[in-house]
Length: 96
Image 1: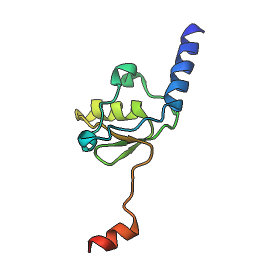
Image 2 (image 1 turned 180 degrees about the horizontal axis):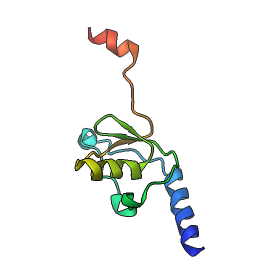
Image 3 (image 1 turned 120 degrees about the vertical axis):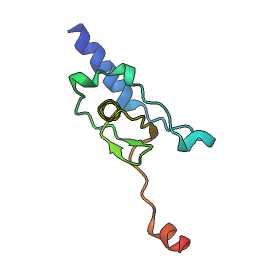
């Protein structure tokens, strides 16, 4: 029961946190995922808290990004919290 309460509080904290990746020159490198908070070998929650990775792939939550890194032996970082940005039609035509 106590573990469930702690888990719920951590989940709530993650859901309420709307921080972004660093906004200075290191933004294209992203921020490191807090994989030590998860045990992806035991599975991840189904809570949708989207993360855009530095590989421009959308992950359902931070745990799934960690799981991807563990399975593929990669180091994808967090580009930003939320959906990945799609280039607008205007920016595509402006570059041509």
